Image 1 (cartoon, rainbow, N blue to C red):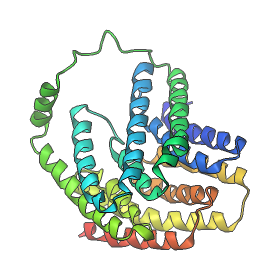
Image 2: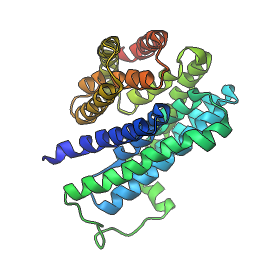
Image 3: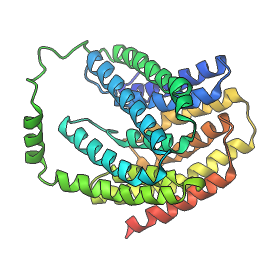
Image 4: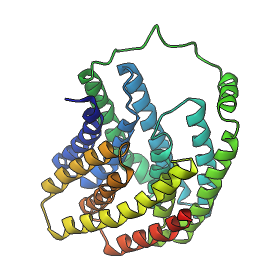
Length: 318
């Protein structure tokens, strides 16, 4: 099998295994949280087994911290813009300091927004729901090792690993490579500050999708990429919601919903680096399926989400 198919397959397997476990223990809500943890697999790179275990584990830890931070922020909703701006500024710089490849900070911000919208007692999250995320991370690490073996990756790059740089050296190198990086980080966090304020105002109407959408679009960083991502995001939202609603109207069984979830996950990860617009066709159906599996599906949420996408993304086209 070609290497280009193995990473998307790994992402799909991580999601599928988590949902299969959820079905076996009769707890689909925990499974939907496990899917968030399974996003940790997306840190996978064609380097070495050791690198992938480390990268997936650290990505999973960042997702867990972001989810808990979002859930904690929900207790003081007015703090959301300030916490989001601080988190996005820090995440942006960390990915540049340590040369973290895509999807770098996006899923951290997405899981943070999801945690903010989760609205469960914190003690319940810490003692129960957090295990769903950890399950997803553990499954992702195991799948990452197996995919690394299928790709015949070495266990470690040692002794070819270069000398470790100090934080000061990394900072100097970052500024030398891109002198405007601090300006970009400030610009990125300031826009998310505004979107977070909108999310705060629309907390009861699915407003956190404004934050997620903006983070996805802005991850293009360069203006031309942002414009292309905006068009792809809006078009993908329209087509994706139509596909998702069509699936729900068919009233298929849980087994088929999970199979479709895995398929859409594979297609999303396969097309994301190749054709951003097509990849977004399969993103929204995954959200709708997860909502249906967790019994939180509401047509009103989709309508509001669609309108928020159009309202917030259209100005970037100018």
